[in-house]
Image 1: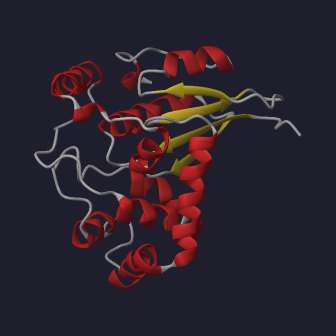
Image 2: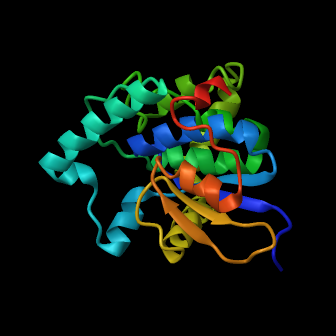
Length: 221
């Protein structure tokens, strides 16, 4: 049965710098997109790449150089702060599993936990449990017991691991090949449309009949 509201599912992995940019920009546009249901779904980008035999941009020196320059330009145009980390890439299995657990058990805080600057501003290694704990401390009011419980679940809970893998498999089945990827449905339609990258918001807006003020003016909304 077709949904009565338009929907956007964003498949993401914190290792992707374009995911970081995309999340920041998307949250600006959402202020005027209140009639759209939005879901941020964690996936393992490396798992997607391996399954479809794709290679990331950083595997090619020329593409890596362009990626860094491109992200700096996006930052300059949009005003989204950005700094490419010295250590790149890092494993995101642990933080993505933590986010999977938070999506299930802490829905009100979940998106705040995605919107962190640890990696692409401060250059901290988000594969490490202590870095994840520091990032979550302000959101959970330094409740170390609760944060440690989510870190433990992410490392040991077979149900969390299963759900995270299901999300990754689901992304592959929908044709996802990179991050961020947006799966878009119009209200009243069952057709799913795939939009890849942090620069597809104008197309998404046009497809769903939503307002779009442009990259340079969106910060004024």
